[in-house]
Amino acid sequence: MKILNLYAGIGGNRKLWGNDHEITAVELRPEIAAIYQDFFPNDQVVVGDAHQYLLEHYREFDFIWSSPPCQSHSTLRGRTCVAKGQSKPIYFDTKLWQEIIFLKTYCKKDFVVENVIPYYKPLIAPDFKIQRHLFWSNKFILSTHFEKDNIDRGNVKIWQDNTGFDLGNYQFSRKSGLRKEQILKNCVRPEHRCGGYRKKSASL
Image 1: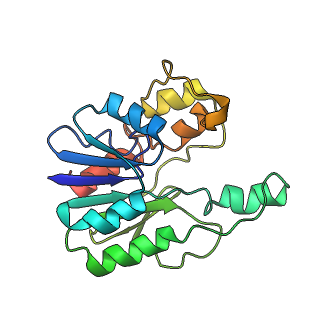
Image 2: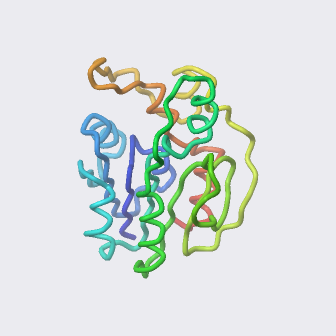
């Protein structure tokens, strides 16, 4: 199966897909893409704009997974952090909704778009929900319940244990703006939370 993994990060959602597929991962940050390539050396890794790559290449794949950045949609930032004066209000990124409409309209193969439950009413009703995540898809996957993961609490060691990714050998400059905490928090917990259920349901 040819799989397109958009906004790939270091590969949290990728971990349980196995090695029997031809996977192309797209990640904007070269530093993050390099870590992904280290963990998944057999995948083709493209450093670039996932949103544009989807538009130009969606016909080439049997399954598309898209997980656009969630920061501008999240309840934590949109309500809690703004209310406490820790963050300024910002416009949410409309690329999420563009991709959902685009795939539902034009994609004839299987796809899943994932994001967090937003601080506002979703512009398009999700097809299913798993824990704090909403999903839009042309595949039928039952909603289910998972224990709350308390993503806003913990430390690097805890998040490394939870995700199965060891970033001990990686260092980031302050100028890069990258933090191990955030990189790991952007991953799913593949072994026993959403990742395994998604894999089983999607028959990957």
